[in-house]
Image 1 (spheres, rainbow, N blue to C red):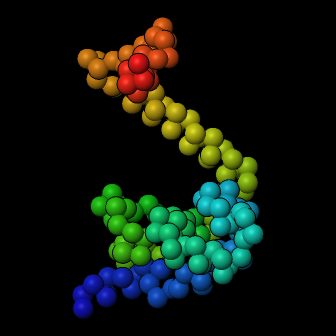
Image 2: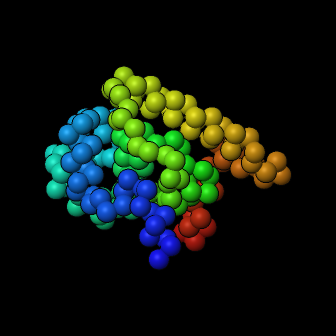
Amino acid sequence: MNDEINYQNNPLHGLSLKSLLIEIVDHYGFEILFAYLNINCFNKNPSIDSAVKYLKKTDWAREKVEAFYLYKFKSLPRASDEQFELPPRDRIVPPNQIPGPPAELSLEDAERLREKRIKKAAQHDQEKSRRAAPGKRTPDRSNTPASDSDPWAKWRK
């Protein structure tokens, strides 16, 4: 199997989810993980077993944790766009890329990153509203009586 050889360089190859979580929790702790990943299993009664149970059920959260492991804990460079579309366990890491030391993370950096994401999301929402079709306008219903806005009102008469 040629695919088997390609996955050998991926730090997630052969690593269980529980082992992955133990490594990153021992290094960073639950508070940093929640601050960076914003997944509630790291905030509400955090434990390795409950996090594993939740992450096994929730694909998006597991992929988020695995990507954190690859790019923050193992300090690998960002994957190419086509590889980034794949789940972290399916990505092929080039042979010349070897894992580095874990990134130094702090709660202050996590807060700055969260604020940056909020600004970016707000900017995206503004651009989306500006790009709305010019011919389609939402009707102004501020001057209409309540009975006109109720679709069942005409049946009551």
